[in-house]
Image 1 (cartoon, rainbow over the protein chains, first blue to last red):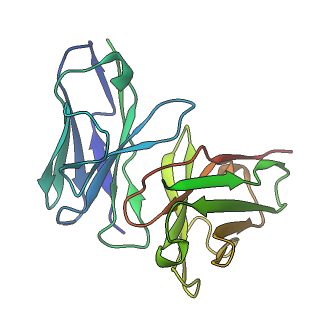
Image 2: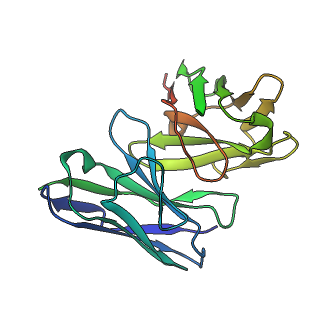
Image 3: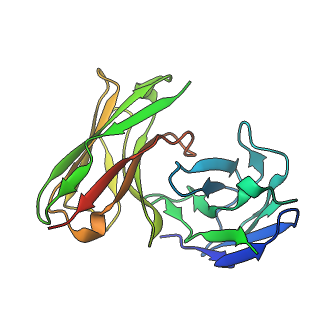
Amino acid sequence: EIVLTQSPVTLSLSPGERATLSCRASQSISNYLAWYQHKPGQAPRLLIYDASNRATGIPARFSGSGSGTDFTLTISSLEPEDFAVYYCQQRTIWPPFTFGPGTTVDIK
Amino acid sequence: QVQLVESGGGVVQPGKSLRLSCAASGFTFNRYVMHWVRHTPGKGLEWVAAVSSDGSTQYYADSVKGRFTISRDNSKNTQYLQMNRLTAEDTAVYYCLNGGWFDPWGQGTLVTVSS
């Protein structure tokens, strides 16, 4: 089973700041990684797929990079609506599909 | 557009059973692998199970193997999750999803296992 590790656990930032979130896989997953945003009381939302492709309707301030075992989600300038939990997910080797434990981006 | 509507959640006692349903529309249902994923505040997102496009093959997370059964009815564009021998650890919002990357997500259905 591929294990995904996310860091940091919590990121405390102010609106307008840059957020950098990390996801590391226990073995190479090529570029088969996605990022999701989850806000309390709402359904999760796909942000990035195949490591670097923005999903439909996702603002350009969200970008993804990486391949192999190390991946990054960057939010270039935080908007108030971006404070949420972010999960990475792989689908290279399944079952199981695996998710990371999440990074909470909260307001400083 | 793709729509996935989950139903069947509720409050159930430990050891009891529950069946979730997911009505799909807006895509060619019988061409896609279908999944169930659950969310708990403590554990985050957890993939639960998947079923092949023709329903012949099922895949399960270790945490539910032997207790949960995933199935689908392509004539009704619906998939199911039969959950038996439920425990408190199964308390979660359950989401029905299709295909490779999970998009879009429905509102989910809440399952609460409590005495």
